[in-house]
Length: 204
Image (cartoon, rainbow, N blue to C red; front, side, top):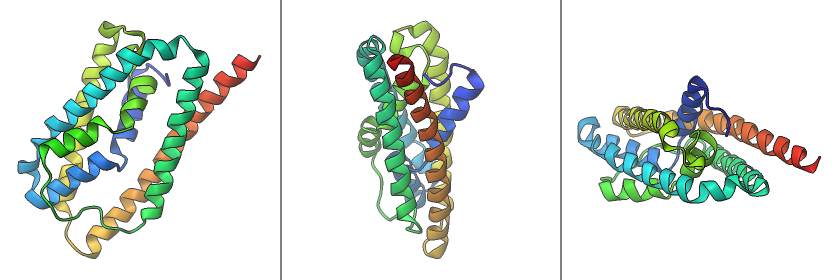
């Protein structure tokens, strides 16, 4: 767990939610294709996908991970490596357009979000108390996370709706990807440092 402090929790969630990824790309595509109002229904698919995945991972696998320090360290390291991989991938995509043509379906957003690896980081590193099955304590953080998911998702839809075809779309896509890649590297460093500290403590 990185921290249970509300402000730090919000900042970490916004950082992870806001970075480009498969779900955010679909939301932006929908905004560019059918507009903001007609795309807002997709937020329900995103919320359902994230919550089902986070709760399933946290409640079923959380106790197993918490009872095994080596597994906890390995999970943190794996999450850090995933973030590094995603950051490199985003940076290499460079100036490719952020959106493309095609109507996005509710089922598509739900399935993509359900399988989004970000849910692993939320379940085991960001949402306090969940992996300990302390639902009463975790509930305020989960509710807050739902609100953040809706806000960030709507922002991506609005971004897509505001984009125009051509160089403008590629320029915005480039800036978003480069900033997102940098933010992911910072987040990976935090997780990696936590894993290293835990491993060093276990070695002693």
